[in-house]
Amino acid sequence: MTGPASLKARVVEVVRETEDAHSIVLEPAEGDADRFTYRPGQFLTVRVPAGDGWAARCYSLCSSPVLGERLKVTVKRVADGVGSNWICDNVTEGDVLEVLRPAGTFTPRSLDDDFLLFAGGSGITPVMSILKSCLAGGTGTVTLVYANRDERSVIFAEELRALSAEHGERLTVVHWLESVQGLPSEDAVRALCRPYTGREAFICGPQKFMDMAVAALDGAGMPSRQVHVERFFSLAGDPFGPFEDDAADETDGAADPGDAATVDVEMDGETTTLTWPRNQHLLDVMLRAGMDAPSSCREGSCAACACVLVEGEAVMDANTVLDKQDLADGLVLACQAKPISDRLKVSYDG
Image 1 (spheres, rainbow, N blue to C red):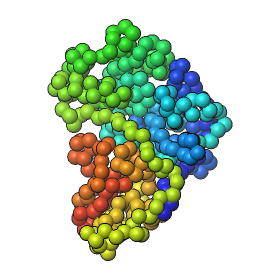
Image 2 (spheres, rainbow, N blue to C red):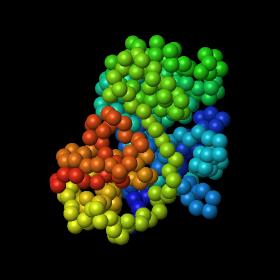
Image 3 (tube, rainbow, N blue to C red):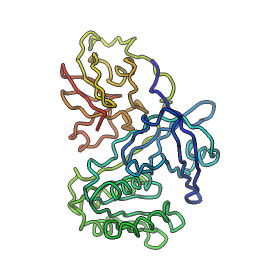
Image 4 (cartoon, rainbow, N blue to C red):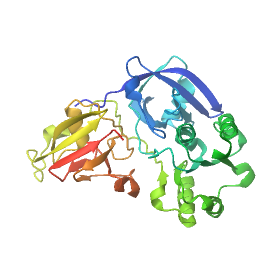
């Protein structure tokens, strides 16, 4: 079975944001623009060389779909990072990258809410997309707490200053510099965010930073349903290559392939009705039917394939990325979902 349809995007500009962070501005291949539709906070999966083969890495979009900006991802070097070092060392204007459709669940339900945003280092990337989109297309206020080693490490420093000047009382940016204030502590951040516990919080950055911010918000009394955390995992396989059709050789006697449910899949404004065998994952069923279903890791770790279960009940074999609120909102991972109900409906259309 073939994998998800990959897309081509030409590099039209490379911006050196800091000494170790580059922004890559992309332009879809002719005729593919509609397949790059995305929501604030989502990411692109990029194919990168790895040894004698290929690997895939997920990079958040820092551009805003509300503003109609060109697609832009920002990549910060990571020690021994396969993707980040290759991109920063080799990608130049005119190159063509192979990518998958934008995906991810780290995105606001409404741009009209008030927001409390936390970013650590390169975690500013999806947060910047959310921030700009809310200011341009929403009505609420935004407070950003942005932690970095020092002033030279601040990605988008000039852009943030310009946005603060343009949006006045709607945007507050709080810089936390380790060189000045030390590492952010849970107690200090808890005190900082107490006035904002009625807002929607979005957090992205190093794992310790995100854990600290979540604990601080919990201690300040913010309900967990208002807290959204972006988590990335290194992808073990190459989602750009062909997938083996495991269902064709299914021998699990506990599940009869002839025992199937029916699912209506809403995608790109169209509804497709599929037969969904109970021992097969939804993503495999969609790909076998020729659907351009978004996916990346196929491991339950990236949320690229996440969709909303509108009707019926399904179970997931694995999930390391959807949180309790995502599950309460009906999100499921198509690469891990198997049907329980006889009739189901899922939607990729928001």
